[in-house]
Length: 88
Image (cartoon, rainbow, N blue to C red; front, side, top):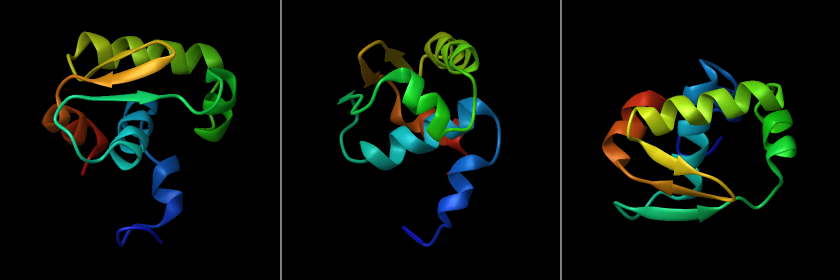
């Protein structure tokens, strides 16, 4: 349990929620944060229990929502929006 929430919480909700939750937990401080992905996207997809294609589509949706930019690094553009998507 981290921050009072079960680690299984990370695997609930939509793929967008899972990604948002993970990024909020891994890059929790700054308003605009660059978080370099510590693992390949294919591994991240497995960690989130989704297919690589689903991960890609979800990242595109988060980008379109203005919450983040994603590539080899994830840039948090709007932490409040990202936290709202995460359900936090």
